[in-house]
Image (cartoon, rainbow, N blue to C red; front, side, top):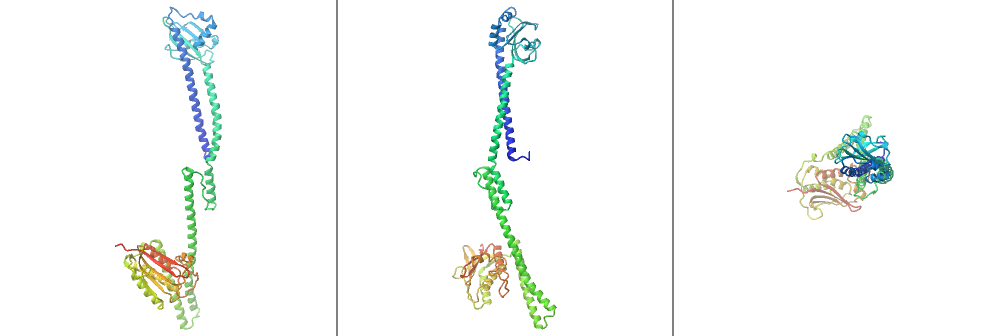
Length: 481
């Protein structure tokens, strides 16, 4: 059964129910018809026995005279539907009997069977003497005679009628079953067509076409409509999940490539300097000192890169455990950032204002001051590294839209929309060069700044345009009084 298709199983189940229903209906009709036939015949037999037994007479009824006139006898017995009439005396012997000429004497019931019929007007079935069929008999005690009057009729006609009804039921039921089974086959095929289309869609998706969707096969309120909507929702989530996984794998490959390059460069410098010293190529003390300075510089860069990577990994795993929160004001960080910028480039104009100009305002927050200093240092260092010397920088601090705000805005060359969309990616640099000139970083500063800001429940936002400078805005939740 499991090897059959759903269509075949449903059809077999439906056909089985239909066959059972038709069989039950045929059996009920035949049984009711048989009850009707027997009831009608029993009524006729009771009427005749009641009529004959109620006639008062000193002796048995004179049935011989009636038998001598078979035409009249046949008409009389046929009117009452009782072709056989018998009178038994008190001893059980046949005192008189008469039967219709249409009934052969050999088919009449036996005497011992007649004696067994109860004399209470209840009907009983008797076999024919030659076994050719059944008889129905009713007996009553004869009034004033001391005997029993029995009327009997053959059931051959009734049995034949019931047999014809049963045969007709079987033939019509079989024809109806075949017709309805054929109609059900086509109806089920049409009803299951949406499932086949869903199967084809699933096969296409399994083949790699994740953009395929189940077409609208039925109204949304139906079972097929609900199934199609649920499948399309699931398929959309699967497509997004696969796209996210592919993007994550691409980012991971780029990340591994960038990390490998960033680690390899200082290691090559350190290893090369050590090889020169081992080979004796550093003859003078000045050469040795210069090699040691290169090793120290690259080791410092390698240490800083390793610490940045470790910090990012810790923030990814659980930022809350990396913070030591306490009340503070962002104005402190803004003033310190101004001094840091002037120390890096004394000729650069730096001013501290409010978020959108005007005087600076209070910006109380509940945060880790050391980590926020790292955020502001990265934003200030980014402005110093990517703008020409002497470019003005504005540091804005205060509140905006119900949040504490610290801006670092420059008037440098700005960035394109594509660069702005990727500037917070790890190891991303706008020129994508591997230059290690002064001020060039590994491309982790802005990624660390955003991760630390989000760990505090805030964010770092960028607003820039090519030729219009850039503004990095640190936003944090205000301190709750």
